[in-house]
Image (cartoon, rainbow, N blue to C red; front, side, top):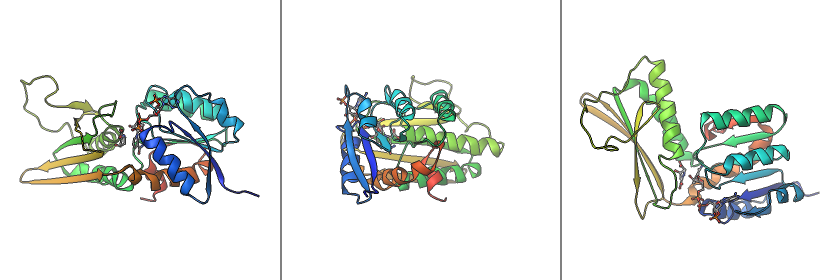
Length: 250
Ligand SMILES: NC(=O)C1=CN([C@@H]2O[C@H](COP(=O)(O)OP(=O)(O)OC[C@H]3O[C@@H](n4cnc5c(N)ncnc54)[C@H](OP(=O)(O)O)[C@@H]3O)[C@@H](O)[C@H]2O)C=CC1
Ligand SMILES: O=C(O)C1=N[C@H](C(=O)O)C[C@H](O)C1
């Protein structure tokens, strides 16, 4: 009997979807049984006997896809960005009615990026100032990146737990946007530049010193070990899991 996990890729024609499809095809314990793109009927997933669907689509459709997969009893690994607390809460509620089904949403599957987020949260309480710069290819549709938002969230939680207020900033006059966007009270700056793939810097400052944490994804293959790990593990993680860090024993 074939024991391979039956996988579907949603957004299979996209930059990430095509890379994931190739990685699944190359994995001996996984079987790619469906590739879907915009306009394809999601019912094809259930018809193909899919066990795990991987969603790398666009922020506007990813939540609809996840609810459809959960209704079909299919576990889901989500890399698409654009998720906010309200959307995650709706998925959590939905999963309460579907015991045994797992959904894992991760803003970044690159191991180094996950570690950068963890290190940033760990370091945050020791620094007076912090700002995030994320740098991406210019075909990206959302800003700031999901990774930067997740990084800011972890830093904000750590600073709040340590009783730290906002980073000092005497700016009273500025052009709109010059100081970036505030995400959970943390300044985030988004760069879009041809030649880049996916990069992030976390700048932490104290009087007389600075710590810079930087991660670079030079190629989309950097995300594949994390995606495949999630595909293999999501079936044993009922309910909603947010972030690959929960699978890395950090
Ligand atoms: N978590 C992580 O580690 C990473 C996350 N990402 C995120 O993944 C997402 C995709 O990125 P990327 O691959 O670069 O984007 P692309 O635009 O290259 O790919 C998106 C794909 O989704 C397709 N699509 C659109 N609507 C649907 C639908 N309803 N059902 C199925 N497919 C659909 C698009 O088709 P069409 O073009 O025909 O509309 C396109 O092929 C983004 O949110 C990005 O931020 C990216 C890299 C890593
Ligand atoms: O669109 C991308 O390319 C990426 N998107 C994710 C994000 O928004 O954080 C992950 C990675 O940065 C690449």
